[in-house]
Image (cartoon, rainbow, N blue to C red; front, side, top):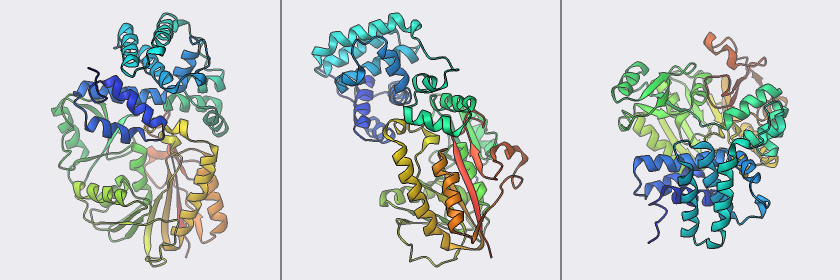
Length: 452
Protein backbone atom coordinates (compact mmCIF):
# COMPACT_ATOMS: atom_id res chain seq x y z
CA UNK A 1 0.00 0.00 0.00
CA UNK A 2 1.58 3.27 -1.07
CA UNK A 3 1.86 6.18 1.34
CA UNK A 4 -0.01 9.40 0.89
CA UNK A 5 1.81 12.79 0.73
CA UNK A 6 0.79 13.41 4.33
CA UNK A 7 2.30 10.11 5.58
CA UNK A 8 5.88 10.45 4.31
CA UNK A 9 8.08 13.54 4.83
CA UNK A 10 9.95 13.05 1.55
CA UNK A 11 6.75 12.46 -0.41
CA UNK A 12 5.23 15.56 1.20
CA UNK A 13 8.30 17.63 0.31
CA UNK A 14 8.20 16.35 -3.28
CA UNK A 15 4.51 17.21 -3.66
CA UNK A 16 5.08 20.71 -2.29
CA UNK A 17 8.05 21.32 -4.59
CA UNK A 18 5.97 20.23 -7.57
CA UNK A 19 3.24 22.70 -6.63
CA UNK A 20 5.75 25.51 -6.11
CA UNK A 21 7.26 24.80 -9.54
CA UNK A 22 3.74 25.28 -10.94
CA UNK A 23 3.44 28.71 -9.32
CA UNK A 24 2.32 28.13 -5.71
CA UNK A 25 3.97 29.79 -2.72
CA UNK A 26 6.17 27.53 -0.60
CA UNK A 27 4.94 28.84 2.75
CA UNK A 28 1.28 28.47 1.76
CA UNK A 29 1.82 24.93 0.49
CA UNK A 30 3.73 23.94 3.62
CA UNK A 31 0.90 25.21 5.81
CA UNK A 32 -1.68 23.39 3.67
CA UNK A 33 0.10 20.04 3.46
CA UNK A 34 1.37 19.94 7.05
CA UNK A 35 -2.01 21.12 8.30
CA UNK A 36 -3.66 17.92 7.09
CA UNK A 37 -0.77 15.55 7.73
CA UNK A 38 -0.25 12.99 10.50
CA UNK A 39 3.51 13.59 10.63
CA UNK A 40 5.20 14.03 14.00
CA UNK A 41 7.21 17.15 14.90
CA UNK A 42 10.53 15.70 13.72
CA UNK A 43 9.14 14.75 10.31
CA UNK A 44 7.40 18.12 9.94
CA UNK A 45 10.72 19.83 10.50
CA UNK A 46 12.32 17.56 7.89
CA UNK A 47 9.65 18.51 5.33
CA UNK A 48 10.25 22.21 6.00
CA UNK A 49 14.02 21.75 5.80
CA UNK A 50 13.78 19.86 2.50
CA UNK A 51 11.41 22.33 0.82
CA UNK A 52 13.16 25.54 1.83
CA UNK A 53 16.65 24.06 1.52
CA UNK A 54 16.12 22.71 -1.99
CA UNK A 55 14.55 25.96 -3.21
CA UNK A 56 17.35 28.04 -1.66
CA UNK A 57 20.14 25.84 -3.04
CA UNK A 58 18.62 24.68 -6.32
CA UNK A 59 21.43 26.27 -8.32
CA UNK A 60 24.10 24.60 -6.18
CA UNK A 61 22.33 21.23 -6.35
CA UNK A 62 21.95 21.44 -10.12
CA UNK A 63 25.66 22.26 -10.54
CA UNK A 64 26.54 19.16 -8.53
CA UNK A 65 24.10 16.96 -10.45
CA UNK A 66 25.50 18.18 -13.76
CA UNK A 67 28.85 16.60 -12.88
CA UNK A 68 27.29 13.14 -12.68
CA UNK A 69 24.39 13.23 -15.12
CA UNK A 70 25.07 12.15 -18.71
CA UNK A 71 22.39 14.41 -20.19
CA UNK A 72 21.45 18.09 -19.71
CA UNK A 73 19.21 18.60 -16.68
CA UNK A 74 16.75 20.72 -18.68
CA UNK A 75 16.01 17.69 -20.86
CA UNK A 76 15.01 15.50 -17.94
CA UNK A 77 11.39 14.80 -17.12
CA UNK A 78 10.51 17.45 -14.47
CA UNK A 79 9.37 14.81 -11.98
CA UNK A 80 12.71 13.02 -12.32
CA UNK A 81 14.69 16.23 -11.88
CA UNK A 82 12.84 17.11 -8.67
CA UNK A 83 13.52 13.62 -7.31
CA UNK A 84 17.21 14.02 -8.11
CA UNK A 85 17.24 17.36 -6.33
CA UNK A 86 15.50 15.80 -3.34
CA UNK A 87 18.10 13.06 -3.07
CA UNK A 88 21.06 15.31 -3.86
CA UNK A 89 20.11 17.85 -1.19
CA UNK A 90 20.14 15.12 1.45
CA UNK A 91 23.53 13.85 0.27
CA UNK A 92 25.14 17.28 0.08
CA UNK A 93 23.56 19.21 2.94
CA UNK A 94 22.07 16.85 5.56
CA UNK A 95 24.81 15.11 7.53
CA UNK A 96 22.23 13.47 9.78
CA UNK A 97 20.75 11.52 6.85
CA UNK A 98 22.92 8.50 5.92
CA UNK A 99 23.85 8.36 2.25
CA UNK A 100 22.20 4.99 1.72
CA UNK A 101 18.95 6.34 3.23
CA UNK A 102 19.02 9.41 0.98
CA UNK A 103 19.49 7.27 -2.14
CA UNK A 104 17.15 4.43 -1.23
CA UNK A 105 14.31 6.67 -0.08
CA UNK A 106 14.48 8.63 -3.34
CA UNK A 107 14.47 5.46 -5.42
CA UNK A 108 11.50 4.08 -3.47
CA UNK A 109 9.65 7.37 -3.92
CA UNK A 110 10.22 7.12 -7.69
CA UNK A 111 8.59 3.68 -7.61
CA UNK A 112 5.70 5.04 -5.53
CA UNK A 113 5.16 7.71 -8.16
CA UNK A 114 5.14 5.05 -10.89
CA UNK A 115 8.32 6.37 -12.50
CA UNK A 116 9.73 2.86 -12.96
CA UNK A 117 11.52 3.77 -16.20
CA UNK A 118 13.63 6.32 -14.33
CA UNK A 119 14.46 4.28 -11.22
CA UNK A 120 17.77 2.93 -12.52
CA UNK A 121 18.82 6.35 -13.79
CA UNK A 122 18.00 8.07 -10.48
CA UNK A 123 19.82 5.37 -8.53
CA UNK A 124 22.92 5.62 -10.73
CA UNK A 125 23.16 9.43 -10.63
CA UNK A 126 22.72 9.65 -6.86
CA UNK A 127 25.21 6.87 -6.15
CA UNK A 128 27.73 8.56 -8.44
CA UNK A 129 27.13 11.83 -6.62
CA UNK A 130 27.69 10.13 -3.28
CA UNK A 131 30.99 8.62 -4.43
CA UNK A 132 32.26 11.76 -6.11
CA UNK A 133 30.89 14.62 -4.01
CA UNK A 134 34.29 15.49 -2.52
CA UNK A 135 35.66 16.04 -6.04
CA UNK A 136 32.99 18.43 -7.31
CA UNK A 137 34.82 21.40 -8.95
CA UNK A 138 33.12 24.17 -7.03
CA UNK A 139 34.08 27.65 -8.30
CA UNK A 140 36.47 29.51 -6.01
CA UNK A 141 35.16 32.59 -4.14
CA UNK A 142 37.51 34.80 -6.18
CA UNK A 143 35.63 33.85 -9.34
CA UNK A 144 32.72 35.96 -8.27
CA UNK A 145 30.20 35.31 -11.07
CA UNK A 146 30.36 31.47 -11.16
CA UNK A 147 30.70 31.41 -7.37
CA UNK A 148 27.47 33.36 -6.91
CA UNK A 149 25.64 31.19 -9.44
CA UNK A 150 26.90 27.71 -8.58
CA UNK A 151 27.85 27.93 -4.90
CA UNK A 152 25.47 30.63 -3.63
CA UNK A 153 22.67 29.40 -5.89
CA UNK A 154 21.82 32.69 -7.58
CA UNK A 155 20.28 32.65 -11.08
CA UNK A 156 22.18 34.60 -13.73
CA UNK A 157 19.90 37.66 -13.58
CA UNK A 158 20.22 37.94 -9.80
CA UNK A 159 23.98 37.47 -9.96
CA UNK A 160 24.15 40.47 -12.30
CA UNK A 161 21.97 42.49 -9.92
CA UNK A 162 24.22 41.76 -6.93
CA UNK A 163 27.37 42.59 -8.89
CA UNK A 164 25.84 45.82 -10.22
CA UNK A 165 24.64 46.86 -6.77
CA UNK A 166 27.66 46.04 -4.60
CA UNK A 167 31.46 45.67 -4.72
CA UNK A 168 32.57 42.08 -5.31
CA UNK A 169 33.41 41.31 -1.68
CA UNK A 170 30.03 42.60 -0.47
CA UNK A 171 28.16 40.90 -3.34
CA UNK A 172 29.77 37.60 -2.41
CA UNK A 173 28.91 38.10 1.27
CA UNK A 174 25.29 38.91 0.43
CA UNK A 175 25.07 35.92 -1.90
CA UNK A 176 26.38 33.64 0.83
CA UNK A 177 23.86 35.05 3.30
CA UNK A 178 20.91 34.58 0.94
CA UNK A 179 21.92 30.95 0.41
CA UNK A 180 21.62 30.20 4.12
CA UNK A 181 18.62 29.77 6.40
CA UNK A 182 17.12 32.89 8.00
CA UNK A 183 17.06 33.44 11.74
CA UNK A 184 13.84 33.02 13.72
CA UNK A 185 13.26 36.49 15.13
CA UNK A 186 10.38 37.65 17.28
CA UNK A 187 9.13 41.09 18.27
CA UNK A 188 8.15 41.18 21.91
CA UNK A 189 4.74 42.84 22.24
CA UNK A 190 5.23 45.70 24.68
CA UNK A 191 1.48 45.93 25.21
CA UNK A 192 1.64 42.57 27.02
CA UNK A 193 5.19 42.03 28.35
CA UNK A 194 8.80 43.18 27.98
CA UNK A 195 11.90 41.62 26.44
CA UNK A 196 13.59 40.66 29.71
CA UNK A 197 10.54 38.80 31.00
CA UNK A 198 10.01 37.11 27.64
CA UNK A 199 13.63 35.90 27.54
CA UNK A 200 13.14 34.48 31.02
CA UNK A 201 9.99 32.69 29.87
CA UNK A 202 11.85 31.25 26.88
CA UNK A 203 14.68 29.95 29.07
CA UNK A 204 12.17 28.35 31.43
CA UNK A 205 11.05 25.98 28.66
CA UNK A 206 14.64 25.48 27.40
CA UNK A 207 14.59 27.64 24.28
CA UNK A 208 17.96 29.31 23.70
CA UNK A 209 17.62 32.94 22.62
CA UNK A 210 19.38 36.29 22.67
CA UNK A 211 18.28 39.94 22.34
CA UNK A 212 18.68 41.52 18.91
CA UNK A 213 21.45 44.08 18.47
CA UNK A 214 19.39 46.84 16.84
CA UNK A 215 15.67 46.32 17.51
CA UNK A 216 14.91 47.03 21.18
CA UNK A 217 11.96 44.59 21.16
CA UNK A 218 13.71 41.93 19.06
CA UNK A 219 14.62 38.43 20.20
CA UNK A 220 16.39 35.81 18.07
CA UNK A 221 15.77 32.13 18.82
CA UNK A 222 19.08 30.28 18.56
CA UNK A 223 17.79 26.80 19.33
CA UNK A 224 14.23 25.63 19.88
CA UNK A 225 13.32 22.98 22.41
CA UNK A 226 10.48 20.51 21.95
CA UNK A 227 8.21 22.88 23.90
CA UNK A 228 5.99 25.53 22.23
CA UNK A 229 7.09 29.14 22.38
CA UNK A 230 5.55 30.70 25.50
CA UNK A 231 2.81 33.32 25.25
CA UNK A 232 1.54 32.55 21.76
CA UNK A 233 -2.15 32.56 22.66
CA UNK A 234 -1.62 35.46 25.05
CA UNK A 235 -0.06 37.64 22.33
CA UNK A 236 3.34 38.09 23.93
CA UNK A 237 5.17 38.12 20.61
CA UNK A 238 4.94 38.48 16.85
CA UNK A 239 7.22 36.61 14.45
CA UNK A 240 8.99 39.43 12.62
CA UNK A 241 12.48 39.96 11.25
CA UNK A 242 14.69 42.52 12.98
CA UNK A 243 14.87 44.78 9.92
CA UNK A 244 11.08 44.79 9.69
CA UNK A 245 10.87 45.72 13.38
CA UNK A 246 12.97 48.82 12.74
CA UNK A 247 10.49 50.27 10.24
CA UNK A 248 7.89 51.35 12.80
CA UNK A 249 10.63 53.08 14.79
CA UNK A 250 11.73 55.00 11.69
CA UNK A 251 8.23 56.42 11.21
CA UNK A 252 8.62 58.37 14.49
CA UNK A 253 4.95 58.02 15.45
CA UNK A 254 3.45 59.43 18.66
CA UNK A 255 0.22 59.01 20.65
CA UNK A 256 -2.55 61.25 19.38
CA UNK A 257 -1.45 61.13 15.76
CA UNK A 258 -3.44 59.87 12.79
CA UNK A 259 -1.44 57.15 11.04
CA UNK A 260 -1.96 55.29 7.76
CA UNK A 261 -0.35 51.93 7.08
CA UNK A 262 -0.89 51.89 3.34
CA UNK A 263 -0.04 48.25 2.44
CA UNK A 264 -0.45 46.74 5.85
CA UNK A 265 -0.96 42.97 5.64
CA UNK A 266 -0.13 40.74 7.37
CA UNK A 267 0.04 43.49 10.00
CA UNK A 268 3.35 43.11 11.82
CA UNK A 269 4.32 46.74 11.36
CA UNK A 270 0.75 47.95 11.98
CA UNK A 271 0.53 46.24 15.35
CA UNK A 272 4.02 47.47 16.21
CA UNK A 273 2.87 51.04 15.58
CA UNK A 274 -0.05 50.43 17.93
CA UNK A 275 2.35 49.17 20.60
CA UNK A 276 4.76 52.08 20.16
CA UNK A 277 1.90 54.56 20.57
CA UNK A 278 0.41 52.58 23.49
CA UNK A 279 -2.88 52.16 21.62
CA UNK A 280 -3.34 55.94 21.72
CA UNK A 281 -2.99 56.76 18.01
CA UNK A 282 -5.65 56.47 15.31
CA UNK A 283 -4.32 53.85 12.91
CA UNK A 284 -5.92 52.99 9.57
CA UNK A 285 -4.56 49.85 7.89
CA UNK A 286 -5.30 49.28 4.20
CA UNK A 287 -4.68 46.26 2.02
CA UNK A 288 -5.77 45.23 -1.45
CA UNK A 289 -7.17 41.80 -0.59
CA UNK A 290 -10.07 41.06 1.79
CA UNK A 291 -8.48 37.91 3.26
CA UNK A 292 -5.32 39.88 4.09
CA UNK A 293 -7.46 42.51 5.81
CA UNK A 294 -8.81 39.70 7.96
CA UNK A 295 -5.23 38.72 8.84
CA UNK A 296 -4.58 42.28 10.08
CA UNK A 297 -7.70 42.17 12.22
CA UNK A 298 -6.87 38.74 13.63
CA UNK A 299 -3.33 39.82 14.49
CA UNK A 300 -4.53 43.02 16.13
CA UNK A 301 -6.97 41.09 18.29
CA UNK A 302 -4.36 38.53 19.34
CA UNK A 303 -1.83 41.22 20.29
CA UNK A 304 -4.32 43.49 22.07
CA UNK A 305 -4.09 46.36 19.58
CA UNK A 306 -7.31 48.32 19.97
CA UNK A 307 -6.39 51.41 17.95
CA UNK A 308 -6.36 49.77 14.49
CA UNK A 309 -9.13 49.94 11.90
CA UNK A 310 -8.50 47.72 8.84
CA UNK A 311 -10.11 48.22 5.44
CA UNK A 312 -9.80 46.80 1.95
CA UNK A 313 -8.53 49.21 -0.70
CA UNK A 314 -6.30 49.06 -3.78
CA UNK A 315 -4.05 52.09 -3.60
CA UNK A 316 -3.38 52.11 -7.32
CA UNK A 317 -6.78 53.83 -7.28
CA UNK A 318 -7.39 57.21 -5.72
CA UNK A 319 -8.50 56.75 -2.06
CA UNK A 320 -11.30 59.30 -2.43
CA UNK A 321 -12.82 58.29 0.90
CA UNK A 322 -9.80 59.82 2.68
CA UNK A 323 -9.38 63.55 3.19
CA UNK A 324 -6.29 65.19 1.70
CA UNK A 325 -3.58 66.27 4.13
CA UNK A 326 -5.23 64.34 6.98
CA UNK A 327 -2.45 62.01 8.21
CA UNK A 328 0.47 62.89 10.47
CA UNK A 329 2.34 59.74 9.50
CA UNK A 330 2.11 57.29 6.59
CA UNK A 331 3.96 54.01 6.36
CA UNK A 332 4.22 52.60 2.85
CA UNK A 333 5.81 49.16 3.00
CA UNK A 334 5.40 48.78 -0.73
CA UNK A 335 4.94 45.61 -2.78
CA UNK A 336 8.41 44.69 -4.04
CA UNK A 337 10.56 41.93 -5.49
CA UNK A 338 11.44 40.61 -2.04
CA UNK A 339 15.10 40.11 -2.98
CA UNK A 340 16.06 40.96 0.59
CA UNK A 341 14.00 38.08 2.00
CA UNK A 342 14.94 35.32 -0.44
CA UNK A 343 16.02 33.18 2.51
CA UNK A 344 12.38 33.17 3.64
CA UNK A 345 10.76 33.03 0.19
CA UNK A 346 13.42 31.15 -1.79
CA UNK A 347 11.22 30.41 -4.79
CA UNK A 348 11.46 34.15 -5.58
CA UNK A 349 14.91 33.76 -7.09
CA UNK A 350 13.58 31.28 -9.64
CA UNK A 351 10.25 32.87 -10.58
CA UNK A 352 11.30 36.54 -10.97
CA UNK A 353 13.26 38.46 -13.58
CA UNK A 354 14.46 42.04 -14.25
CA UNK A 355 11.13 42.62 -16.01
CA UNK A 356 9.34 42.05 -12.70
CA UNK A 357 11.59 44.61 -10.99
CA UNK A 358 10.71 47.26 -13.58
CA UNK A 359 7.00 46.49 -13.27
CA UNK A 360 7.19 46.71 -9.49
CA UNK A 361 8.99 50.04 -9.65
CA UNK A 362 6.08 51.43 -11.68
CA UNK A 363 3.62 50.06 -9.11
CA UNK A 364 5.61 51.56 -6.24
CA UNK A 365 5.49 54.99 -7.85
CA UNK A 366 1.74 54.65 -8.41
CA UNK A 367 1.14 53.96 -4.74
CA UNK A 368 3.54 56.69 -3.60
CA UNK A 369 1.71 59.19 -5.82
CA UNK A 370 -1.61 57.97 -4.42
CA UNK A 371 -0.72 58.42 -0.74
CA UNK A 372 1.42 61.57 -1.00
CA UNK A 373 -1.55 64.01 -0.99
CA UNK A 374 -2.78 62.47 2.27
CA UNK A 375 0.25 63.66 4.28
CA UNK A 376 -0.25 66.79 6.39
CA UNK A 377 2.20 69.68 5.95
CA UNK A 378 5.04 68.84 8.31
CA UNK A 379 3.98 65.17 8.32
CA UNK A 380 6.19 62.25 7.41
CA UNK A 381 5.98 59.44 4.84
CA UNK A 382 8.19 56.38 5.29
CA UNK A 383 8.82 54.30 2.18
CA UNK A 384 10.21 50.83 2.89
CA UNK A 385 10.87 47.71 0.82
CA UNK A 386 12.48 44.34 1.58
CA UNK A 387 14.79 44.48 -1.41
CA UNK A 388 18.12 45.96 -2.46
CA UNK A 389 17.60 46.55 -6.19
CA UNK A 390 18.43 50.11 -7.25
CA UNK A 391 15.31 50.52 -9.38
CA UNK A 392 13.01 49.80 -6.40
CA UNK A 393 14.94 51.87 -3.85
CA UNK A 394 17.00 54.97 -4.64
CA UNK A 395 15.67 55.29 -8.19
CA UNK A 396 12.06 55.20 -6.99
CA UNK A 397 12.67 57.83 -4.32
CA UNK A 398 14.68 60.07 -6.67
CA UNK A 399 11.95 60.02 -9.32
CA UNK A 400 9.26 60.70 -6.70
CA UNK A 401 11.14 63.73 -5.33
CA UNK A 402 11.62 65.12 -8.84
CA UNK A 403 7.85 65.11 -9.33
CA UNK A 404 6.92 66.16 -5.79
CA UNK A 405 8.87 69.27 -4.73
CA UNK A 406 6.56 69.55 -1.71
CA UNK A 407 8.53 66.67 -0.13
CA UNK A 408 12.14 66.44 0.97
CA UNK A 409 14.26 63.47 1.92
CA UNK A 410 15.18 63.43 5.60
CA UNK A 411 18.64 62.37 6.75
CA UNK A 412 17.92 59.61 9.25
CA UNK A 413 21.52 59.44 10.40
CA UNK A 414 21.89 60.99 13.85
CA UNK A 415 18.15 60.91 14.57
CA UNK A 416 18.26 57.50 16.24
CA UNK A 417 20.44 55.49 18.59
CA UNK A 418 24.16 55.77 17.92
CA UNK A 419 24.16 51.97 17.71
CA UNK A 420 22.24 52.30 14.43
CA UNK A 421 24.81 54.48 12.68
CA UNK A 422 26.04 51.69 10.38
CA UNK A 423 22.51 51.17 9.04
CA UNK A 424 22.33 54.57 7.34
CA UNK A 425 23.77 55.63 3.98
CA UNK A 426 25.38 58.95 3.12
CA UNK A 427 22.01 60.12 1.79
CA UNK A 428 20.38 59.34 5.13
CA UNK A 429 18.39 56.31 3.97
CA UNK A 430 18.48 52.94 5.70
CA UNK A 431 20.04 49.89 4.06
CA UNK A 432 20.39 46.68 6.03
CA UNK A 433 22.22 43.55 4.91
CA UNK A 434 22.38 40.18 6.67
CA UNK A 435 26.16 39.80 6.32
CA UNK A 436 26.95 42.93 8.35
CA UNK A 437 23.83 43.84 10.35
CA UNK A 438 23.04 41.11 12.88
CA UNK A 439 21.89 38.67 10.16
CA UNK A 440 18.71 40.72 9.58
CA UNK A 441 16.99 40.77 6.20
CA UNK A 442 18.03 43.22 3.47
CA UNK A 443 15.74 46.26 3.71
CA UNK A 444 15.65 49.80 2.38
CA UNK A 445 13.83 52.74 3.94
CA UNK A 446 13.59 56.44 3.15
CA UNK A 447 11.69 59.03 5.21
CA UNK A 448 10.11 61.95 3.40
CA UNK A 449 8.75 65.07 5.07
CA UNK A 450 6.07 67.25 3.55
CA UNK A 451 7.09 70.87 3.57
CA UNK A 452 4.83 73.64 4.79
